[in-house]
Length: 166
Image (cartoon, rainbow, N blue to C red; front, side):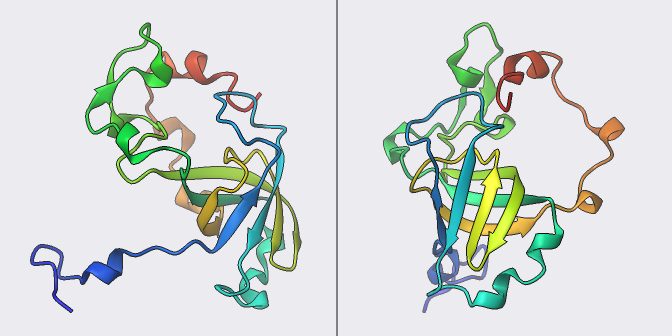
């Protein structure tokens, strides 16, 4: 197989296969009120052995990587736009916001782990829709987060996103 001259990897190195699927009561995109949404991540036994989740119940929260499968590639933003389509907010480059119309249409979300039942993960606050392909699941670990006082964000962000989880 031919290697990419810049990265040194083969094209197959970029293939990503879902390890599971989201089962959620939400099937239509919505901007807000995700905090109380209970969902299930059904992990694929063809991709993972049952002991892949051993110890996961020791964690209160997960980081879930998923594919925005309902976003057409033609809707991809490669420049800038107003967050949430709100013209009262400043235009930001796609890499300066969490818009679902990203170049690779990947989402990363943190949610509460309510329970583990075999390869079924019960979660709350996962902002992914019914049928969303799950690409990876990791335990949320505070050691990998910056100190809250070190985080810098635009002043308007809290007000604009205040209803996202609540």
